[in-house]
Length: 401
Image 1 (cartoon, one colour):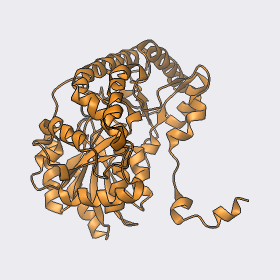
Image 2 (image 1 turned 45 degrees about the vertical axis):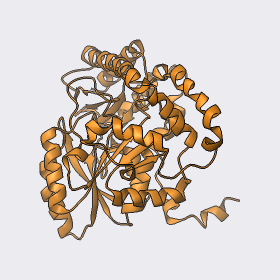
Image 3 (image 1 turned 135 degrees about the horizontal axis):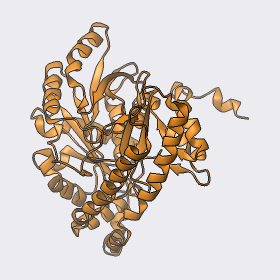
């Protein structure tokens, strides 16, 4: 029966890549499993009561909110975001420089529609967000990976890389970077490198996609200026999300950029989903309007900082420190551990036997790599569970040495 479909699949469907994390779910959900594999916020920090208060907006304006909304997004929420993000953006952006989306994941897809032709190249960090690879790959993209270290993308390697790629006839469409507490590496791009990246963008005429879902979840140090704020020429598009600062179930994100790129993304969004949920947007606006976002964000940060610290302490207690190294993240959701003598795939099998899960490093690399790396999430589990999980992971590592 299925043959009729197989014979008619598009080229994209025949080559589509499933998410390695989603494919692991059946394994991760085994009874007694401690999972560091997902990238989920902790449900016990969701502000359920405060968010529910906004539901009365349906009684006031339900006839409009239950109707189709504008593709561009709910105007009151856009106005709030323009004010709220102004310190990070360097100015208050105008309404036509912002698009509300169905999560910031949709921005990745829209950028694929607007920017990528089959065979084009995207410059990414190595490692980088695997769902970005999937979104861009599904539009026909190929990738050029730039190494990262504790200070983020090694920007100094870009000019030589770009010139070599262009000499080979490769067409580079944009540079994709997760600037703060990168997924998966946990590193943050320094201010010096941000400025250099803007200079390189101008020199070679390549725009920048600044993805920042974690930036407001900072535990230590000072917030750094966005790349968007450092580029007066408008060559940067910035993506943000309510998934990490409110709750992922809201499915609302946003992007900010020049009118030219925002208009193109809006036209493609019209065809994809007509509009993001007006109800979700209105509920988020009510939550923000009452001051809950600013009041609750410190609670999220305190919860995740405690869990980050519990994982750091557990690493030092249970992992063989001469065999494993990592960068302590200043915020965000992830540790990225490097194990020069351990194959992460083999370690995963042994760890699963001990009822602890993580994500191996390989899927996060554009063109191979990561065989000795693992991404470890700390936001979802409670501190005592984190300690037990790291203890099991440490036992698995020692058995392999």
